[in-house]
Amino acid sequence: MMRKTTLLLTVGTLGLFQACGSLSNLPIGDISLPTAGLEGLPVQKKLSQEDAASGLKEALMKGVGAGTQQLQQAGGFSQNAVYKILLPPEIQSLESKIRNSALLNAAIGKELDKAIAAMNQGAEMATAKALPIFKNTVQQMSFADALQILTGGNGAATQYLKTNTTNALTAAFQPEIKTALETVAIYQYWTPIVNTINRNKKVLGIVNDVQPNLENYVTEKALFALFSEIEVQENLIRKDPIQRGSELLKRVFDYADKNQTTSP
Image: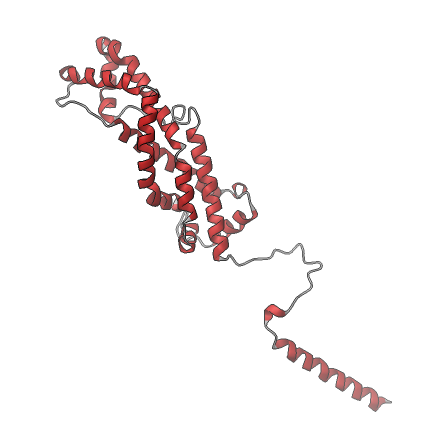
């Protein structure tokens, strides 16, 4: 009886080792482990190229949408202490002299105020043209660009957009701003301002006539505000996990946090 029991144990042990040897030859992906009781443990999923690109595009559109939405609202420029468009430098440098001259202030003081209001309103109207241009650029972004931007630190996405959209935005903004400025009748105020300044060059201490290009100036200021606001939104998503609304954004920017190539 003892010999029979020993023989059975030996056979059973050999069978176990053979089974283990067979399992060791299986591809690891073919082994399905039970997951009961493991729900509370974190599972680290590898970030694929598709996830990186999709997550970054989602974040960019979120930041672009928030930035453009704020600026295109009534008061988005005029009531913003950072982005409010003031008079062009050629005029701004003379403003205090105009305001302090009873004659000049009576002639064009109110027109200066109206011109400032009109420029800001024109920028607000033009900003609405930006979103489709950004969307097109984001959709065409490559996997390589997405990964580089993702790990590039604060402002990397904004810089990519600036490089790839400035020409298109300028082309779209300028006619829109021109139309907007005409809609708010800015030249009704602007032409008398320029003419009065040029007639009073000696009083104001200037030699040459001033002829600032209003459309170019407002376009430049509008683009500066737009990219600045988008960078604010981008950096909020990078810095604050609460801003990473979707599960994909959380995974993608958790990866970016651990693989950042530049200091914040």
